[in-house]
Image (tube, rainbow, N blue to C red; front, side):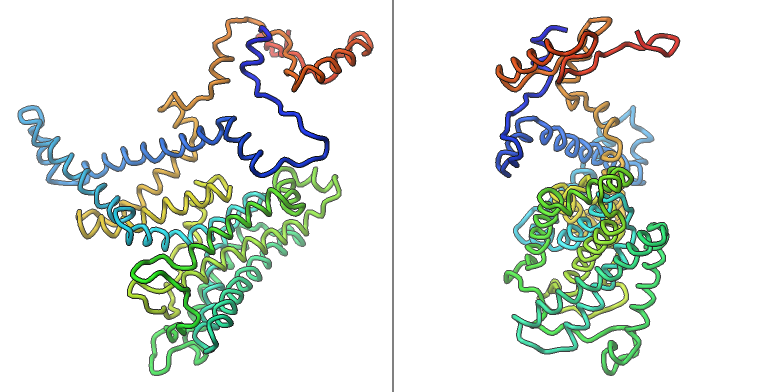
Length: 461
């Protein structure tokens, strides 16, 4: 392999001062120039496109009128294709109009996306530390319980009442997740089992509390609480669904990124998630990191439940606490975290996508007469394609990396040893001086090991 080919394939190395951390702008510029952002975005877009194509096929095959026209497809093909196109176009047009077709639709998308982003951040943080936090549902329920109780029980001024309700919900989720983290760190209990069981306990506790006099609305016998006091309701822009919860979700995503990428605790979380044994050998307290990571993850999920109970309803009023108030946000958050690759920025985009699908599903049902479950099918298809990036690259070959294509096109039967290009001429001269002083038989300092080709016997030549 020639030096020119190596220089074209290998990424450029930027010289930095020793011990100096690159700025945020420089880090973003390096990632942008590398092209990894475009490839990741391209994979996400193509996964969405392929899911829409499969969804269109499902729309056609599930409609009996279109299938009836398919019986005489060869004699009058226009009937079938026109009916299929009208069905697909009307459904996806309703989906787009219900999610991004107007200013109100956009704010509806943000309203539905806010709790998904917060819970997705919590689940994704658990993934980064190596824990499968399925307990986001229970943590969101406890956030709803405590935030709702503070919201309807007290009548304080808004500058005091709203922060107190938010803090109560945040603490509820943190304590509930911290219990699972402590059991894992102290006794090695599997977090998948403990969080699932804690979900059932949280659901049962919510139903029980709503039947007590402290929570149940006076004069009612069904499990429902009084409505949240207006001073504890999240402010919103009049005539829209855009409320303070969406801003809280964006700030939480920024805080999660800063925690993971710019703090010592974030480094420990990533180190434990990559290799807990190596992190322990390096002197990190793995039990402490696991516990504190679960506490932070639970606080984010609890904050998702807080936003659900404190946000205004579609008519601008406040919500009461009820059994099905949380919905399935904790389980949907797993999908959001997977789609966002457990990264804060990706989680925000995934939460907005799923918020748009949920907002558009109502329009699909009312305008196009499409079953509400189709939105869930689209979500499942998107996750399927995102979870199989090789499938997406196979179906869309242009997403393959340029460097990999150039390497595979090389016709050398046996690759020569490749020495990584230096950052500058000065570093190259230093490497040459070091190599000349090295003992015979030792590889030059800073060089990459020789690439060997496997033989039929399994060895290397």
